Image (cartoon, rainbow, N blue to C red; front, side):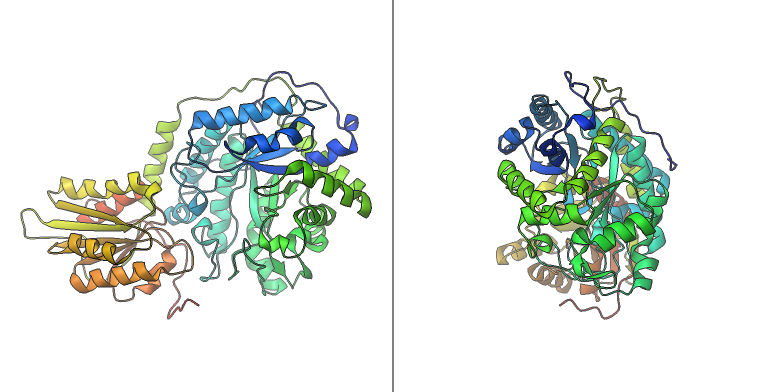
Length: 546
């Protein structure tokens, strides 16, 4: 297994022409710029060009888009080319949200499919999870990415959590901790800076901080025992960065969300836990932040509270925001705090060797090893939740039985779905499949029922992102169950959706949609394999969604 304390491979992606510069040479404006991060993608990059060329941005967060690895590399080259024109030619830190789960899908940025954290936890295989993160990290480095906002260390203790779900390793503190450290150290071994999130924990919320201000009512004892525990271990193992959550924790600070709380950032994180790395805010365009201030005002409140790297958000005008932030910094007199934050960012760039003309030295052609590792993890993660009907392994007296597989999946997953057919075809099944929309309409219900009509076995895959049940999807699944008693449910994303189908006797969980998981599930159904996964959450009894 990849252990803690791994030494970074410092020859990261750089462009020629960087000039030698010391922090003391930077103007106050350039220092402030080092603390600010803009969101970019292929189509919007030009919007941030003036700020980059003037040295008023210290980093960028590449947004997901349907483009290739070559286009991603070209985007990074272009951004760093603009940084080379800045007053002191300081390169950008390039970050990405590559955490798996609902944040990443198989066709974005051209990178390899990263499975959900809950799927990795179900495998209970720390070594392979660390290896997967290492291989994924190498791919990120090859295109010039330095920072990954991952892993998620939130303990998903609340089944009604609308935003974390399969992004978490589960509801058990020890599982979240050990699997989180495996991924963290895997990325570190590849030379990627992992930023763990969302401090001090977003797992016990019933509100999405993108749209409102969540409140965690846990007392200090519960926070320490459950939600802070994985972060404490990450700090102990030398994590280089922590991301704050826009969440209110009255037991720690009754007035300020974590991103704006001196108590949480400077006392709890810095003093009590001994963290000396980079504190990064979550995106400041989220309602969890903007409910209290403008983006510029939120940036200054975060800096004042102790944050070092400020994610400004999407669809912004960086130069306009910079002017507003600079004015507020002057007004509040927090120039020394800005200098402290900028020094941390600058030191990280020095540590990574970004100020030197050092070409990257990276292993190539790791994609095959990555896919092999993902396949092995998938075989270990598929979980048999129950089989009251005795349908697994499925047996039929017919020479060529018929199976109908119905999915409810966005089109971006379409290329993953057909893998479910392979084990059935190899066993001489006649296979029918239908991928309905995520929210099926009446015509889609009719097509699903037509697929299942007369089938010896129906396999239906429910897809729920987090806490909210899709009522039209639930209606369709119930109609299919009424039509055919030989029905197996595949929960292919959040396993909390299983509670909505108490009368379905045979249920498998895959915690995500990738071809290896689906093929493994089918192998389990036909008897080629046994399910090995351990569910990382507890399904509540008599659970009712609000």
